[in-house]
Structure formats: C-alpha cells, structure tokens
Image (cartoon, rainbow, N blue to C red; front, side, top):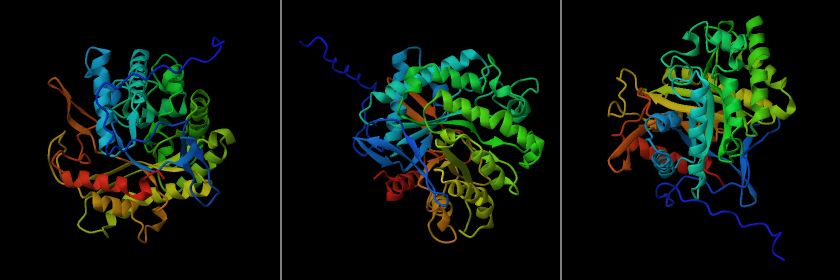
Length: 426
C-alpha cells in the first residue's frame, strides 16, 4: 500500500567546513527564484524572493569575490574536497562579515577557449552545491563577461578595447560584428550556453541574477561613446537586444547588463529607448545598474564627488522612469596618491564619507534614498586560513580601493551599514 508514496528527500550533505550561524548575514533557504517586481513609472522597482511561503523584499550591501572561480581552479587544490573547503571557507567568511550577496566573475582569467568555459562551469557548479549545503545559503550575482582588463578575455592584461583586432573578443567585433556569439571561441554565447546546459547552475535559486557585461565602455570602439549614430544603433541591434534575449531564453533568473559607459548628452534618452523596445517578458526581468567610485576628500563638499556621481543620478533617472529595480553594482573609494598594495596595509579609507556622499539621505542627495541594494568593492579575503597550513587570498584586486587588513574601523563601518534597516530584509 506504500509502493506509490513519494520517497523522502535525500539528506543534504554537510558543508566542507563549520558553518557560522551566529551573526551571519546570510538569508534563509529560498522557496523559489528571485524575481523582479516592477514599479509604476516614476518610482523604482525591487527584487524579491519567497522565504517560508511569503515574499520578502531583498535589501542588501553585498560584497565581491570576483576571482573566486579562478582561485578554485588554479589554487583550490588537487581534489574536489580541497576545492570544497576553499569554497566553504570563503562563503563562511562573507557570511560572518554580514554580506548576504556575493558578486563574482563567471569566467576564468585567461578565458578564450571552450576548455576554460568548461572549467568555469565545473567550479561554479561545485560552488553552488557547496553553498546549497549551508542552512543559510548566500546569494550570487554572476557576471558573464568583463569588458575591462583582468578577467574574461584571451589576453587578461588588456581590456576588450585592446584585444587582438582579429579576435572575436576585440570590442568592435564583439559588440558590432557578432563576435560575442562566435561559436567555439569561448565567447559570451558559449558561456551562456555552457551554464544553461548545467542543471545545477540553471536551476539554482541562490543565483539572484546573471549579468551580461561588466563596465561596458563605448568610448573607443562604439560610436566614440556618444550613444548616437549608426554604430550606436548597431550596438543595440547586433549585441544588446540579441544577447539579452539569449540570456533570458536560456536562464530563468533576473538579468543585468552592468555599468554602461559613454558621454552624458544622449545617455538617458538612448538607454530608455532600447529598454522600451525590449519584449515585455524580457523587460520584466531587467535590473538597472551603475558603479560609483569616489576619492577620499578633506570635506564633503569636494567638487570631485559631483563628478564621481553624475552618472549614478542619471541611472537612477532611467530606473525610476521605467519602474525598474536598481542595483549599485560596485561601490568603492580610492585613496589618491597611494600605491596599490595587494593584501597589505596602506593609506586609510573613510567609508563613512563614502556612504554619506553616495547613499546619504540628506539634500541634495535625497533622490538616492531609493537605493537599497549595493555591492561593496574592496572587501577581499586576505590570507584566508583553510587549516592544515593552507592559506589563500580571494577577491583582493590590489588597487587603491582595496581595504587593507589593518583597517578595522573601515570593516566595522561596513558591518554597521549592513545592519541599517534600509539594507536589511524585512
């Protein structure tokens, strides 16, 4: 009589390291995928996810471990268990910091071959499985392509603007001539297909969103950054619409594009036009983004802050006018005239100033109060102790926006802002 009853779910394997629960910033296990909740034009939408049968609005200050997949492949160790221990230790360190969301590159450093895409898919699947073993799993934003130098192109020392002009990764070919979908080159379409083909990636509810391109710079190779003329039209026709459509068709999560860079004059009108032309089903999954970096300045009225945040205000205008959710995808502070030091002490940051200037509710910044989702840059893991004499550094980029290991006041300020009701789930 019991033959047709469903089997009980298989027990969830334990994580590869002890899970921190006291004071963890990680959220409960979700019931389903995160989703976009659009707003009426004139207000900003939001992201939400169901916990224990009820929808919860997602507010957060997350963090970056941009190179985590690369570290797992090349420094994680020779066995699956060794890599799992690295993944588990990194996730737990972020949970202890109060960050519920981690943004990472969905590529390896020297990407440019199908083999590297397979390796990236393998370790992303491992990372997600390790995360799923936690009682309180973190969430991820996976960025599929990086325009800037560092990760995601055959020559990692160069941006897409400076790749070999014969390569499909060269910016002009990539955005205007279909290079992004050239099969077998390890390019963006290959990456989307590889992730979509892995059920453990495509169906993972811990992924908040997939992001198409990080910091897409148009100044050198697309309409000279003007957002006008035939090349700007070709960018929409040959890249942004079909690439977003492929991403939307192949993966069920919310979608992002990343920080779009160009001149101010036609910026708002151009971006609004191509978003309005998207199919309704795709537009309903879009989250608008911007990146902001300021310099430490002697006073809050420094004119440099206006130069650093003009685009943020334009991006908020776009999100508000279209009723889209908004994510501040990178938030960081540079220390002028300081030598970048990889995981070493140096000039001190003033994150109180950063948060007040960029996020502060006081006039003239009251229009930024709707920002309730941001991801901090520079909070990498330096010398993470893995036990048995193993140590690793992850997400420490070695630039002046990186918070040094000798800055407890900066890290305390980060913990404080993560506790602010503005950035906590209800």
